[in-house]
Length: 204
Image 1 (cartoon, rainbow, N blue to C red):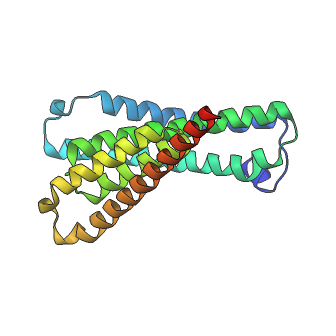
Image 2: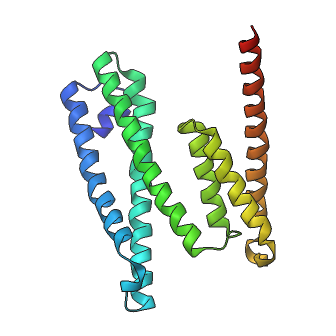
Image 3: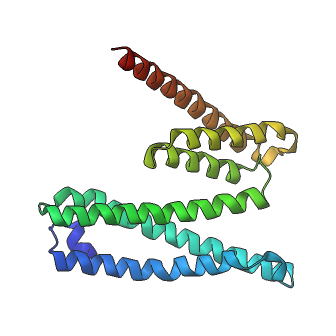
């Protein structure tokens, strides 16, 4: 079915449903596993080794989820939505696209929460997650206020603990901090421009 899609053929309603169900089955198990792992308090593990095994497994599940969601979204954007002529099918695929963005958001939220608990504010992985999460809220969820808050919090917390940076991660961390600051500048400028436009519209 996936090969048919990549060849540019428009799927029938039945074929589209089969493709959707197939990917839902693949995703469902991993989402359930991720939720179960996240719900178990860390102090229930009897050793650091077991705790590390659980963390490694959770990272594996989340990585697989991201990969599956990315594959589905690429199929939707490049082939399914682009080639569809039936309005009903188009609505179906757009809903499917929304579902997989939601699954990605769930994974991002989980990873972001873990990074805040387990990593220093200057850690490049934590900073990178904050960067991607804020961009996701700005560009995909159309929530500029929350995007600015996430980026500003991550940047300010990292600045406050610059002395914890080591030589190994200094370059990566400072580069991501610069990207956070650049986004903040751009998003703040966009917000000011929108407010001016709104004020001018009200006067007219």
